[in-house]
Image (cartoon, rainbow, N blue to C red):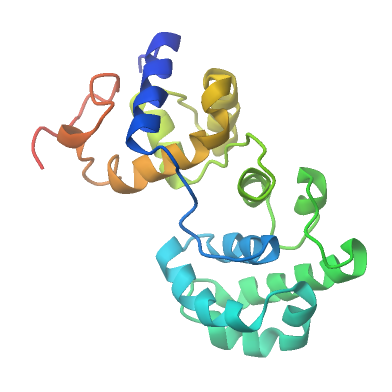
Length: 215
C-alpha cells in the first residue's frame, strides 16, 4: 500500500482538527479513577454500553476505597451488561485495592505504574496518560488500527507497530489529540463494514482503493 507523504499527513490532521476542534473521549467520568475504571471496562465493549453501566455505578463509587468496599459481587450487578464482566469486575476490585495500598488511593501518572495494575495493558495506560495527564500518547484500538492501515497513514501488522509509526509520523502539533481524532473518524466515518467515503474530509488523501462512492 502507498504511504501518505508528510505533506499529506499534515493536511490530513489539519482537516480533522477543523472538523473536530475539541475532540474528547466519549467515556463519561468525573475523576481520574473513574476514567481508569471506564477504560478497563471498555475493552471489547462500546463506550455507549460502558456509560450506561457506569452512570449508576459512579454515582455511588468515586474512589478506589469505595470500590473495594462495594466488593466484586455488587460490582458485577452494575456491569453485567458489559462483555467479560466477571473478569473485569475481578480486575477492577484488584486494581482498586492496589491503588489504596500502594498509591494512597491516587491513580499514578506513569505508564510503568499503570501497567502494574490488574487489567491495565499498554492501550489502557496510553488512554489514561493522554486523557488524564495530557501526554501525547496514541492508544491503538480497533478503529485506529483500521484507519492507520486503510488510509496509508501508518500501516502495520500489530497495534504496537501502528502506534510506533503514528508517533513517528504524526506532526508534533497534532500528537496530543491524534488519538481522539483517529478514533472518532474511525467510529463515525471510516467505518469497518462500509466507510462513508463520500462525506469524508480526507477522502482525497486516503490511499484506500475500495472507497465507497455512495452512502
